[in-house]
Length: 196
Image (cartoon, rainbow, N blue to C red; front, top):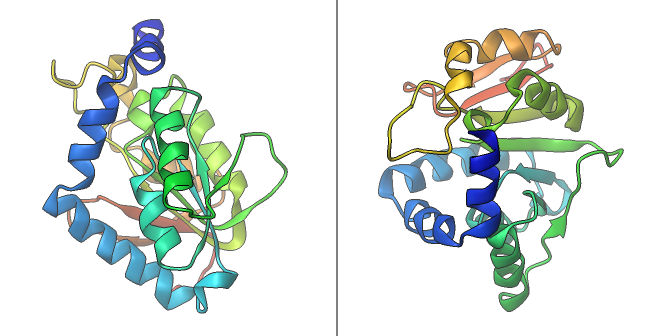
């Protein structure tokens, strides 16, 4: 299944269309307004805040935050979606930087939404997200480990065992919940004790 998932992303442009449509979903857009407000309250001026969008597919979230004046880094594996995203950044003349895992740097905010259910090793992914988050930073995270339906063929069934375990995986990496939306999408993790 994993090989099929990787082939789907790298050999098809179908995910571009789905992701572009989803990025305009009113429910999702309202979530992003809340995320942006959370970041803005903790990072003023925006030009001093580095944000990594980990798994941003077609780059819609990177575009949104870059237009707000934040220093944005984009990461997704090489595919039709990532090439499309980089072309979108170029056409809009946005200073969105590329990031490759393994780079020795950290970010004030690491955002990883609806990526973990596609990952072959979610605990390893969360370890990496925690490593990339500064000591006084935040990781904004959501997952759909239990959303296994035919219309989501790239969600790995092997990850169903991780339903409800994001908090414990982040705790294993020294992070705890700073804020949780009512439907748990997103959950914001930090190492800070006082998150007021």
